Image (cartoon, rainbow, N blue to C red):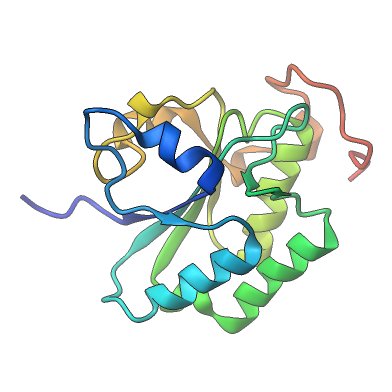
Length: 183
């Protein structure tokens, strides 16, 4: 068996981790939990002590109603929120993700790449981290995961930040515009 590519570094919001991956099939066996940005930083710093290998940082959680932004605990990942953008700028300035050999970030929640707000967050996060960032175009189910995490067979459900553009804003969106969508 050869290594096909990056392995997922799975970090899930505790409010979805247990129910989402429960059941007879082994899904997402190695799963870290983070109920907010501070805990996410702690997980990433702890992972520095582990052998590094190319990986995707898979942030797993429910998405918010309306804007469909991924939530870690009670914190929506919204790059217009100054606390959220400062957190990710800090990760970039510390070089934490390159030291972990993270090659991409994936926001794995239901439809995180569908709304204007979600697409804007993907673009801004990608620009801040200088990494490819992906969101989802469909609701995710536990069947979209295998023992390692997000199943590559469902990669077609992902949308790259680079594939979104403000001019295309409403493509695929079932939801209204975010008040800050003048961007």
